[in-house]
Amino acid sequence: MRSARAIKRAHILLHSHAGKSPAQIGERVAVSVATVYNVRRRYREEGVAAALSERPRSGQPRRLSSEQEAGLTVLA
Image 1: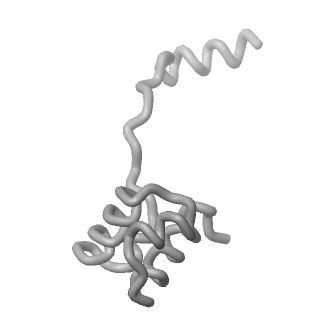
Image 2 (image 1 turned 90 degrees about the horizontal axis):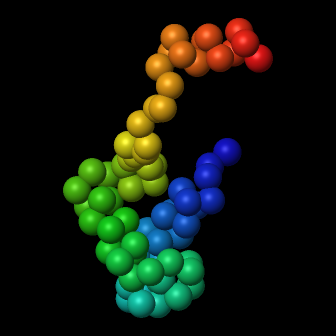
């Protein structure tokens, strides 16, 4: 099953292929024009699989080490 984000990206590419303007695509898919440009650029540079998938995000670093987490689990 695909994520909702991947489905939106697919819609962006389909509307783009149909000749819609970035503003029209953004309005129809409910995303910003910048998102439309980003998805189209990623499709051009990296292909369809990359355009539909998400890049890994760094996120917040872990607060506990694996050892600390294991110790906490034992206490609980």
